[in-house]
Structures are given as structure tokens and as C-alpha cells.
Length: 148
Image (tube, rainbow, N blue to C red):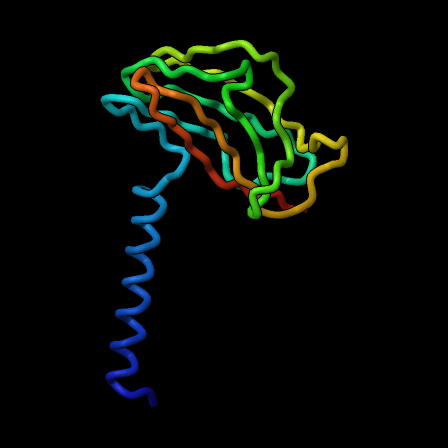
């Protein structure tokens, strides 16, 4: 027979795990778009876990109220490994690009790295960065997983 205190501790642990799980699912969704007053940039994907070889749709959104300026037509998009090593960046021309408030652009990464090899399974970060109207750097990144 189990001790009364053991049953209470297990019950409290199960309940707290359940409520914390609901909090993480409902409140802490990394792909949820939130608009802010002032400069803000959001990088979004459809999901955070992808199968190897699956296309990854990446949305870069000006989620603020001021225009953002980018130094090239790729809007500062780059995919890196956890170590920061560059895996992929779209080929683009050196043209100044502007993203107006609430405007977005979409890119698709086919999981092919810049050297032509397929991306391996693992954790990657998708970055985008620009400059606001005051000259301050704005950069955001999100993690994604690639599985077999």
C-alpha cells in the first residue's frame, strides 16, 4: 500500500504538469504573430518540426508600425546551425528593400544548403534582420527541427 504523502505528491505533480502543459501550448506559441507599436520584425514558419526534404515556408513580417529597411532583396534571411555557421541564404541582389508596416514576404527553403548538399537532421535557426527608421538594428530568429 502506498503512503498517503506519496499519493499526494504524485497527484500534485500530475496536476501541475497538466496545467503547465496547457500554458505552454496555448500561451507560448512561437509562431503566433503579434503586432507592436514601434519597430518590430517577426519570422514565422508553418510549424517547428519538419521531415527531412520537406519544403519550409518562411514568412518575414513587419509586425510594427514603422517601415523597415533591408540591405538586400532577401530581407536579411539566413539559416544557421546552432553554432551560428551559415547553412543557407537566398541569392539576392544588393538592392535596398523596404517592408512597410503589416507587410510580409514569403520565402521557401527546400533544405538544400548553399554548397548544394541536403541539410542534415538537427536544430537550425532562421534569422532575418533590418534597420528601422531611426537606424537601429532589428533582428529576429526562430528555431526549427529537421527530423528523418
